[in-house]
Length: 303
Ligand code: NAD
Ligand code: MLT
Image (cartoon, rainbow, N blue to C red; front, side, top):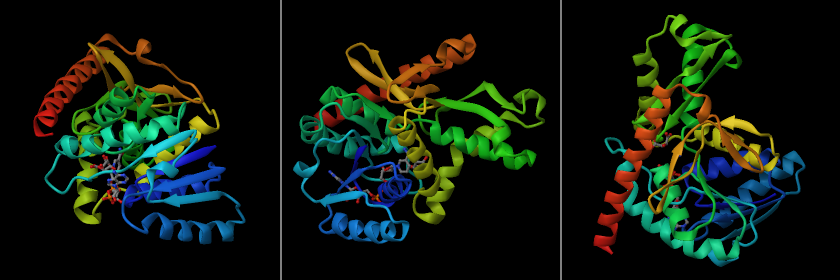
């Protein structure tokens, strides 16, 4: 597959590296606004590919017009949060970037699947899709899903492969743990001897702790996002908690629900969830829509 990477800062580089080294891209296109960054990153990747004996075609550019004909476009361009900020605080700055990218990328990459990573990730997917009409997913809560599984595995000293379950809703502090889906070796969550609060706190709080010490999250999300792209490119049809578009009034609004991810995205498993969890996801959709509308009004006011 031909895969484009829009933004190659901290997370963009890690995602591109993981995807390219896994041999998932027959061609990779690397774009960033920082002069020479794509070019020098291309050299680094070529050195890594040489030792692997991989012949992946790489094109790097500071000119967005060079990004053409991609099958998958991974967007990480934009500001990251600093300690003390919420992801939602990045809306106005990063939405401006998404509006520009929507205009520049979509005509040259028709039919591509757009994978949003930039935060606030679900709302940035909505901005990109509402402005371009191109099908866009956000990596949503697949990151929280894996954080939750890793936490439970460590707590119970059990292999992570025995831990099941998903987190849905909005990526971030308002994510919704879908407790009915959580089990270890077939045992439901309530029989595991863990407290909901400790799982919830870890899942929602660990990113800020990593940012405080390491300046940003990279290895975890990058590997998880690589697996989302892998599932699309290899048509693996894995169930992953990515955010897909839901039509609310006249807007596409993204929230995460465990969904089959392959060459085709969907269906989701929402129908199999208990009413109480469906209602929590609906509430998340309404909240995200409200915040989206408020921020768009502010954005239009500033431009
Ligand atoms: P970073 O500052 O290291 O990198 C951002 C890059 O975007 C920079 O290289 C910058 O030059 C580039 N950029 C800015 N405007 C651009 C444009 N118009 N076109 C192309 N490139 C542009 O930041 P980071 O740590 O890599 O984070 C990037 C984004 O990803 C942030 O919004 C962050 O919150 C988000 N993120 C999301 C997840 C997730 O799970 N969804 C995980 C980690 C980071
Ligand atoms: C994450 O969860 O790792 C990302 O959304 C980055 C962040 O926390 O701001």
